[in-house]
Length: 188
Image 1: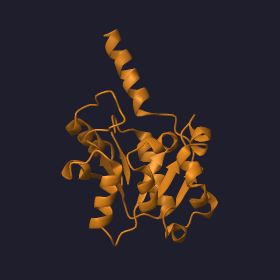
Image 2 (image 1 turned 90 degrees about the vertical axis):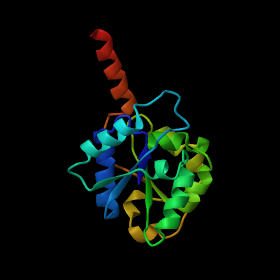
Image 3 (image 1 turned 90 degrees about the horizontal axis):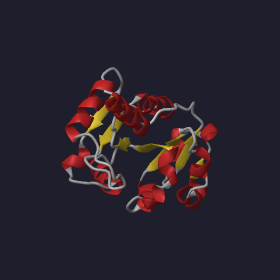
Image 4 (image 1 turned 120 degrees about the horizontal axis):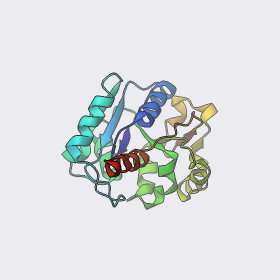
C-alpha cells in the first residue's frame, strides 16, 4: 500500500509501486488516496481530481486505487491500517513510502503503532536518504530493520519489520510538479 495525497500522482509513485511489486512478489499494489493530509498546510487539488488522476496514470499497471480513508472517514494512516488489518486478516500488507516521509514519520499520529502493525518498505529519494536513516523512527526501530540484500518475504513475518530499499532514485516530486505548474500559470 502506498498512501498519500497524490497531488499529482507521478512516475516516481509508479516506479516505487512497480519496484515493490517485483521485489516483494506482491499480487497487487494499492494506492490509498487520502481525502486530507493532516501534515500538509496547502490545499490540494480536489479529492475527485486526485483519484481520477491516479486512475489515469495507473491504467496500464497492476495498481488499484482504493478510497478506504474516505470510506471510513479517516485522516490518519494508523486508523486506515487498523481497518485494513481487521478486514483483510488473511493478507500480508506492506506500507510503502519514500525516504522523505521517514524523516518526519515520528510526527504522524500514533506512528509507533504503524511500525508495530505493518511491515514498512522505504524507497530512496534524492536528497533525503541520509536524514531518513538518522531519523527518530529509524533509530527507534533500528533493531527491526531488514537489510535490502536480505529482503525475503519470510523476513517480514513479524512486526515491527522495515527495509530501506537501495533503488534507483527518481528525481521527481509532487511539490516540484505543483511549483512548475504555478510558474507556467504566472507566465500566461
